[in-house]
Image: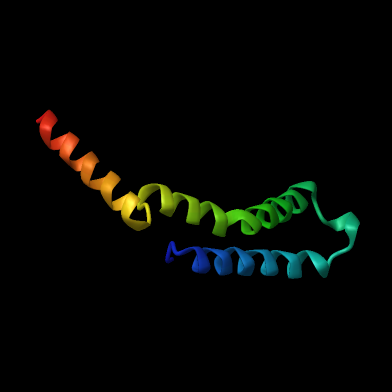
Length: 82
């Protein structure tokens, strides 16, 4: 599975839709609390996964010249420690 934000969003959307389809065919009395909670957790996760992965990507691989300069400085600092 690809870890790009777009692919992650669609992966969780598919998981959500599959579980929702399974649960929608059952009566409320037949659906357990754990199944309901899983659906809610997936809804929350898929809502934020794109933002989470974009934040991680920006943190680990900063964009723009400031990010490049910071990366170079970090590398120079590490080399000087050795």
